[in-house]
Length: 323
Image 1 (cartoon, one colour):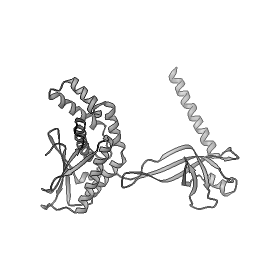
Image 2: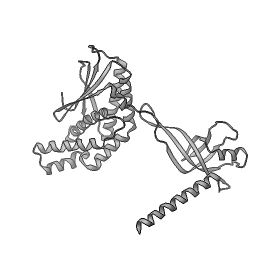
Image 3: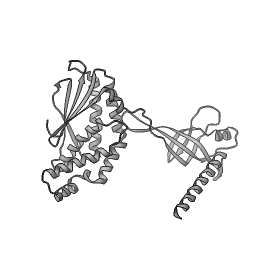
Image 4: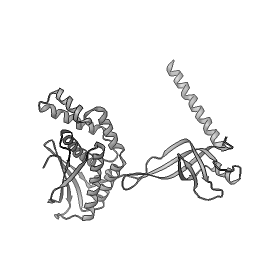
């Protein structure tokens, strides 16, 4: 195998070497998308070359290369190759922090084993490999842990394999720093690499201000329209108290009428790994404005009093700790 090469080996339960072309192409489309996302993080332009198919189940060879002909480029493509394997062999619920520590410890040990002096290694780290500094390891681990594009593509990759019963396991072989490693993932482990849900944790914002554009004045499951953070949004009004105030005409809307509220932004990952907002929910109205004067709602007053009590409790703890 050439340096920085990567092989996927699909293992079948029969003696054939044939695979459904749609499944294979879908898997490799997602895999190439992961490589591109990693390369984007390193700010390097890469190209991926393929070698002819080989028998033995079905084996696909890829080599990651770059047009940059310098030491930095060589290090980067090597790291991308290793990271691709790490990503494809680490379950979706695990983080990559410890993996990075081990990866760069191995690199440093190898450099020292080849009689590269510590001072030379230090210079190499400073000049050519940002990844070998502690703060950058943390940054790259955070990138892998939080990158929704990679998570989704990895999930679709394994979903596709799971949907194809012929594949009993898949293995990944990399050649990096003249060392060849093969890692196996069996079919009964595919589920560990698939997202349980595309839904993300919602973003909750307290004391959000929404200018009402179109209120709902009658009963029913209708969406309101307003301006939030400079954007026009449709939202669900889930405050029963405020809806009753509106429907009983105790609150009148004029041009520029706004509410202070708690808003929940529901988010989801699409098939390309992009985060999309799918809904806004106003779960509580703290106050509304009449002639630019805030009018506190009953639920808003209870909420304010509870927050003030919590704040006083924290202040009390801080005072005791300082004594």
